[in-house]
Length: 480
Ligand SMILES: [Zn+2]
Ligand SMILES: [Zn+2]
Ligand SMILES: [Zn+2]
Figure 1 (cartoon, rainbow, N blue to C red):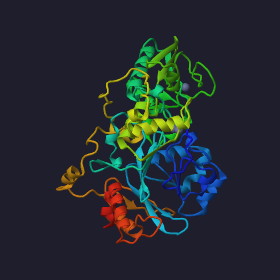
Figure 2: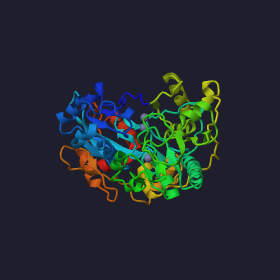
Figure 3: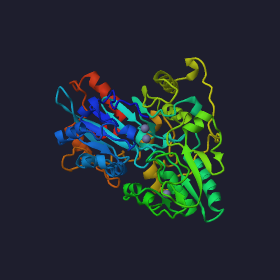
Figure 4: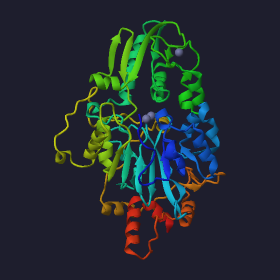
C-alpha cells in the first residue's frame, strides 16, 4: 500500500499518484497505473475542478493506463484532461515557476514498470536533477542495465533521487521466484488437473482487479483455453488484443478468473464441474517462509507464489546499480517501520559492512542461479508488461571509453515532437521519427533554467551546464 505523499522534493510542481489535499494545487499530474492506492483523490470534485481551472493542467499516463482508467465510471469525466505519453519517449513538460512566473522545462520519460498492463515509472530530467519515481515495479536482477532511458549512451545516468516501490523491502523477502517460473508451475498444475476429465475445471482466485493479466495470457496460451473473466475486464482491455483475445465472458470455458468478493471455493459465475482453486499470492509465502512455489492446502486448493513487486534482492540490485544521492521509500512493508526501510535502502547505496551488523537473509522460494534470467518476451509482451530486452551494454564505462565510442557514430537524437493538441503543452512522440529540430525549438524557447538568474559567463553557470550535460547530454545538444 503506497504511502508516498505525491510530491517530489526536486519538482514540487508535480503530483504523482496522489490527487488529494495539497497535491491538487500541482501544475501537472502523473498516474503510474490504476491500482487504488495510487488513485487517492482522482475521483474528487476538487481534483476535477483543478483540471478544469486551466487549459494547460493535465493528467499524464501511458496509453494502456488511460484505457484502464476510463473504463471505470468514476473517472470517465477526466477524459478531456488525460494526456497520454508513449513509453520510452522523452517528452518536455513546461512549468511556470511560482513566484518569478518564469517558464522551465522538465523532460519526462515513461519507462515500463512490469507491474501490471500499462504501468510505468517516471523519469524526470531538469535543472534540479534527474529523478526516478518507480510507482509499483518489478525489475529482475541484472536487468537495470537494460533500461535504455536510464543510460546516456553506455553510461548510467547520474540520478539524484529514486522514489522506489519498497513493498517487499524486507530481508524476509530476499528472493521471490520470477513471474516466468511461477507461471510455469501454475500452468503445469492446471494442465494436470484438466487432464483428469472434461468435468475438471480450474479457478484462479486473484484478489486485485489488475495485475494478473500476464498469468492469464500465459495460462491461456499454454492450455489453448480462453479464461472466463467479468465483462468489465474484457471491456477494459478491448483495445489491447494481446490480452483480450485470451479472455471470454463464456462461463462454459474450463479456466476461470472471475473475481470473488467473498470467501468461497467455487468460481462465482456458477460454473459447474470439479474445481481446483489456485490462489496466487506473495505475502502468505513470506509470512510462512515457504520455499515452494506451490503449497497444497487441500486436495482441490493450492496457494501459488506470484509477485508483481520487486523482491528485496531485486530492489537492492536496482538501487545499488544507480547508486543515487537520495533514495526514498514509497511503501512501508508490514512489520517494518519507515526508519528501518530507509536504513535498508541507504545500505544499498553504500557498503553494508561499514554500517554495522550484516543482515541475515532468508530465501523465499527456490533460489535460482544468479546468472539465470528468463528468456526475452515477445515484442507485444514487452510493451504490455514491461519485458526488458537482453543486456546490450555494460554498466558504467569510463568517460574516455564513452567518448571513443561516440566518435565515428552520429550524435544521439531525441525522438520527441511538439504536440499540437488543444489544451496540451506536452510533446507527443513518434518512435519511428526523430524530431530533434522540434526539441531544439522547445528548449530554445524554454531553456532548462534554474529558479534564479545566473550570468552565462559565471563559473556557477558553467558548473550547472556541466551538471546538466552529465544528466542529459542529448538536451545540451538540442539547445545548441
Ligand atoms: Zn501500490
Ligand atoms: Zn500496484
Ligand atoms: Zn467464471
